[in-house]
Image 1 (cartoon, helix red, strand yellow):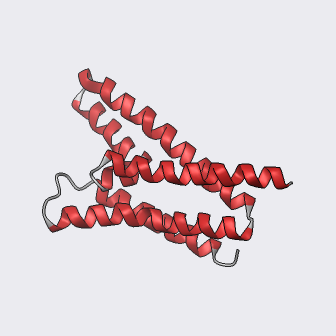
Image 2 (cartoon, rainbow, N blue to C red; image 1 turned 30 degrees about the vertical axis):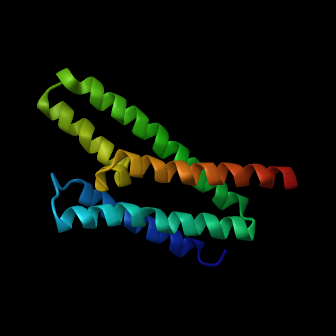
Length: 139
């Protein structure tokens, strides 16, 4: 795949942008729409990368997307549980855990929708799982 490097760079840029936008408290109006659009756009480079990897038969890139999806979903679940359990923690401890959640699950927090963020990662995971299994069967 010729443009895989540029797609990884675009994905990293979207990650940094969405992470920075995730620290904006209580967005309203147009800013809220910008954050939701950024969260949706976060998945575009990954989706194109996965599509190109499947088309080119690049098992390495398919497995990389699968592993990133698994890592993000697992760390997000752990961070959400930690945030819920931090109910009785100090204010600083709660903020630290929330900042960790922003970094771990950037599109979920940036887009202001848990469903949107988790659904995007789950779609990437399921498609990559399906095609990494097919690649194993072929050899």
